[in-house]
Length: 186
Ligand SMILES: CC(C)(COP(=O)(O)OP(=O)(O)OC[C@H]1O[C@@H](n2cnc3c(N)ncnc32)[C@H](O)[C@@H]1OP(=O)(O)O)[C@@H](O)C(=O)NCCC(=O)NCCS
Image 1: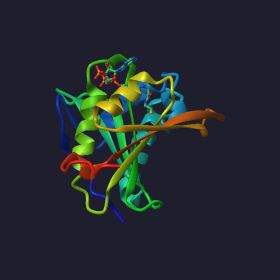
Image 2 (image 1 turned 45 degrees about the horizontal axis):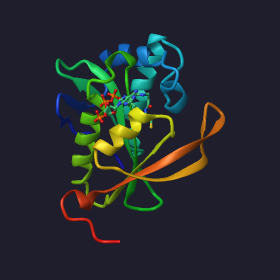
Image 3 (image 1 turned 180 degrees about the horizontal axis):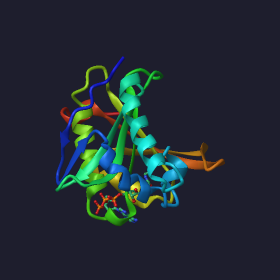
């Protein structure tokens, strides 16, 4: 099932499909200590490898694997990536991941991109819940999630292999209907 990737406006950012001209973004991200370890961004700044990464993102919507957006700042320069990955189990949920190029951090881009993604996700039929996983030391990612309305849950020991090493993760979730209705009491 092919997924249609929309263009999503946010505060100071636009989420859109990747383009070949975004290769310099991928080349810069390849030099980050974390991004190539937690994503499929190549660990080399080779231009052909960056173009292959971009082609893989288009493939993900073609095959129905998920939505991979480039985050563009004003002027359309790509500053990062944000993805929404629907999960078969449990049905109705999807995981979210994001990164911003090192030279464009601390300007609100991740928060704006996640806000735009969440607003759009709430309109997708059949999707009720978003999840994301953050390493306990990653304050920037935790703050980004909390600003978008995600709730912090448990610490999951050794939940995920990062660079071949099992790493603890904090689970965050957001129930999309709670964006528009009051949250039921527990
Ligand atoms: C985490 C990351 C996406 C944040 O992107 P960003 O565009 O710099 O974040 P923003 O400018 O939108 O900031 C969002 C919030 O996080 C805070 N923040 C961002 N980086 C921070 C840092 N290094 N230390 C402390 N707080 C930080 C901001 O102050 C802001 O919080 P506030 O609303 O309370 O002021 C970016 O640092 C990154 O790409 N890191 C590497 C990849 C990664 O960790 N991805 C997430 C994996 S779960």
